[in-house]
Length: 141
Image (tube, rainbow, N blue to C red):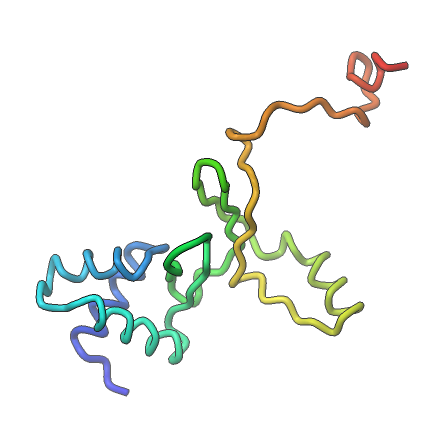
C-alpha cells in the first residue's frame, strides 16, 4: 500500500486530534483538502486500522473514536456529562490476570472504554468502612 496524500492527511488528523470521530477527522482534513468527503475518510480509517496505524474505541453511543495505535490507555466515560478521562492500562492488570486464569481470555485493555459517573457528577458519599476517629463508621459505634 502506498501512502497517498489523502491517507497521510487522515493519519495526520488522527495524530493531531488524538481522539476523534470520522466526522471530526473529515472537518480537520477539509481545512487543507476541501474535496475530501466523509466516505473517503471512513475508507481511509478502515484501511489505516487494518494496517495497524490507528485503532478505534467506542466511547458510547454513536460513531467510534479513532486514535493512533501507540496511544494506549483505558477510557473512563461519564454517562452524565460525557467527560472522557484516561488511565493507564496497567490499572486493569488484576482483572486481566483473573480473566486469563479463570477463562483463558486475553484482555486488550488498550481498546476499552468503561462507562460510569465521574467524580464531579457523583454525589458525595460517606465511607462507612473508614475506621478513623470522627468518621461515619466511628459515629455509628
